[in-house]
Image 1: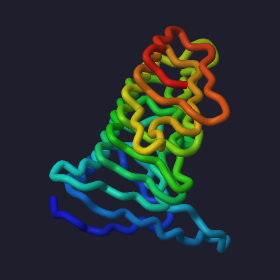
Image 2: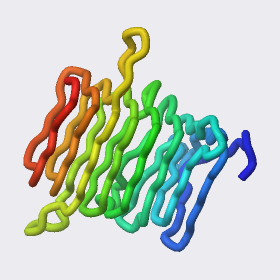
Image 3: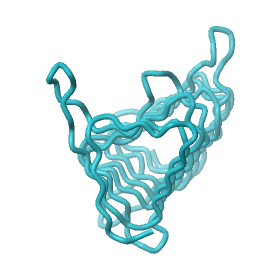
Length: 208
């Protein structure tokens, strides 16, 4: 709850299922890649199996530079507001499997090489007023060989223009395998956007 704190992530850090971390002020989180046992450089990763909230509630932004957030199948929830991912890093699925978490992302930017990519077998994912330079992917992963994804995904109001520079899904958006999807009042740029094999899709008011 203190403004302008600075945190460092070295290598892989695990947020276990019984933990809840909340950062409520503007801050910087810097990724310092570590070295594994074989001497290879490890990415700076926060593996989230519990609950994570990053909100600059009194103004400013939480800046994550060269840091990955990985959502494991045990992840409970993610809430991000007024967050900027810069450099490498961003949000991605865990190698342990698809997420079932409830995810809310509002007024978040992915720039300078940061990416947004989630695989969800369940849960509700809301992406509101988000800007991403690179292609974004929101994938409904099957729960098993016989059970499709139960994920519900909403992409809302990801748009904005200033002096000809559009904000939104600037690299395009891929959404597949989702139980129910809503994409409204958003800007989709890039070479291609793809929507396939979704149970339901509401697509209106968008600029593509």
